[in-house]
Amino acid sequence: MLDERVQAVLARLEAEAEAEREAGLPPERRTLPVGPEAGRLLFALVAANPGCEVLEIGASRGYSTLWLASAARILGGHVVSLEADAAKCEDWRRTIAEAGLEAHADLVEGDALETLPRLDDAFDVVFLDAWKHDYEALFALARTKVDPGGVIVADNVVSHRDELDGWVAAREADTTLVTVTVPVGSGLQVSTVLSPPAPTTP
Ligand SMILES: C[S@@+](CC[C@H](N)C(=O)[O-])C[C@H]1O[C@@H](n2cnc3c(N)ncnc32)[C@H](O)[C@@H]1O
Image 1: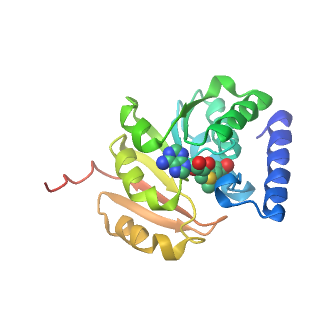
Image 2 (image 1 turned 30 degrees about the horizontal axis):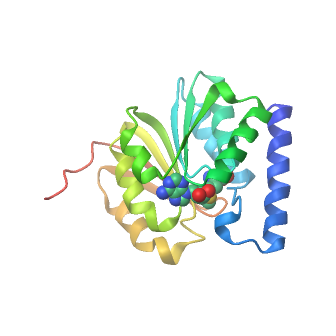
């Protein structure tokens, strides 16, 4: 499923993330990777899709990208990763090069609230893992780029339940989606797109 190069980089990032946690670094300076179980779920969602076009919002140092890009590589898919933090972008490039996945993932550096509207592509799978106060705006932007049949996955809906409660409820009430919370890792919300977004009222 994952080659030895990818496994070695995943293990390095897991060890570094643990060291950051023990050192008490503030969240904005930490890697905050999804972890192996959530990684496997992301892999499973992408690997089954021939030519899967993946959008990742909040790539950090590339841990989740490794899972997404390894899966996309199998059937000719591709990942576009968005990340705002310049130091993390530098580490992301090192991560992807070390794993030999450069042909399968590209990074767009900058605030996704600005870079995402400029992307022309449509995506089959979106992974949302940015700061939680941006979830509503980022989901709305990403939603316009996913056709029926596509899937949007959001992380931390269990670990950040208090902050994201209303947001989760709104996804569950949206009849253009079918949404389920999967209790894996920090809690993943999986929304399959059934129909185009409802028009917004002016
Ligand atoms: C929880 S971490 C992502 C972890 C990563 N998905 C992984 O599993 O390895 C959140 C990341 O989102 C980035 N981020 C937050 N808001 C963003 C935004 N509006 N645009 C781009 N990146 C953003 C942060 O800089 C941070 O690196």
